[in-house]
Image 1 (tube, rainbow, N blue to C red):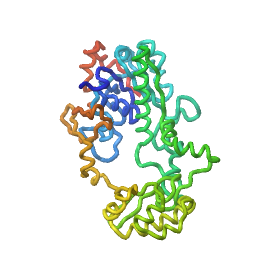
Image 2: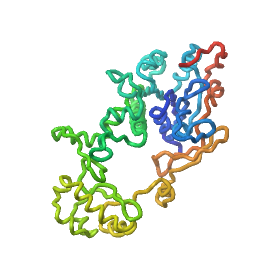
Image 3: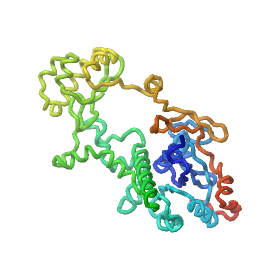
Image 4: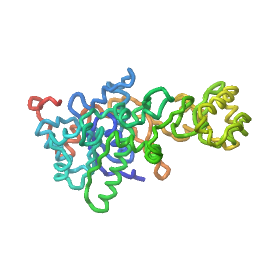
Length: 393
């Protein structure tokens, strides 16, 4: 069966993580994705190293976020190149960009200008904090967005100060949100024939991530979140919610009545606490539970707790996850190769349609790897001679 988005053409003019991750999702669903990069250096993400690992001259981050794409190297400040790109825009279904507010308009590729070229185009943009306002010109960077969003006050323990999440959650969530909007706009286009402008930002994605807790905050007198001082896992959930050390590892306990846990462990000391104490005496209760769980290994507790329908799980690190049978059955990993033969072991898309998960063996492209073929296919003409090109800022 064909992939759901097969036949759609996506132009990825974005850099770093959020915009390119949205293009990646569309590619996983079958769309053809052409990554438009500056000649020579390409996407800045190519040199954004998470570690000192280099794969074929590019960072692992670039490989992860740009697999299954083609690369067209083009200087957007050169009039001939810009005219060629506009001819490609006229044929596209989706355009994704994450320039700082105002930049893409100065290049002549703002929404109104592009809409005049292709009224059916879905024009998608992701910014740091929206297109207007006092934060609009700030760098759209993940840690900065986390810091402004309030999410850092939900992690760590009471008294720790703000603690950021240890991954680029704002970028990745914004990419997912942008993909959602793009797909909705494509559905509407199928009904009306008209394109649309889709916008989100890192900050909006993080606010939406917190919608459950923010709703509580907005309706309980706007009290600040109260993190547990011991084994905190959620500032708004009572004991026993948290991760606890066992004799040989760690065990996660989700929400449940204290009475059930007291009977199942068994731990008679918990009978001294009322249901209301689960929050009011949260740290005290967690310390009682932690002392008991440390007496035996994780397997012991899983064998005891799971049959009693106590919500619990072993806490795995990556090697343990990757070696587990359950993870293997999900078939979430693949090896892709770029045109020069460089192999990259990476993940696959998280969505299964009709029982099938998207898979492509094509890795991330080299800068301009497909320029000649794309120019010929879409009649963009040859690139201007080097002497006529201006350096891209």
